[in-house]
Length: 158
Image (cartoon, rainbow, N blue to C red; front, side, top):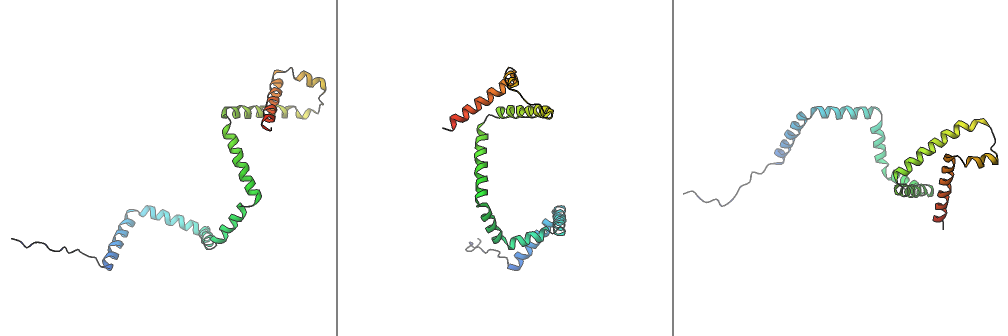
């Protein structure tokens, strides 16, 4: 009968053997990914030739100064005002039905085209022309829309 196993001996690798195994794995990966590595080296060569890598290296050395300047600039009143305006405008725009804004944008474009077409004639508008213009359904619709808009805006300003 065989003697019972009383201890397990692990095969411990020496640091030199571990290093050698890692080098072999790396060589294998390089051989498998040679096209990708060539592309990466080509890209980095182009970036170095353009001076981008030097600029990045300088930015990394000055990262604390750059961060400080960015924070100072972002915390200025004009910048915080712009951020607040953008947030408020985004909130308003996101609450409006997209079909309404599309229709309004198309009507503004049409109105600008019409105004541009007649803007160069230099004629003055008389009171009588204003009164008769209200009989035109298109003009009347635009005036009514403007008045309704002003009424809604006035309600919200209370």
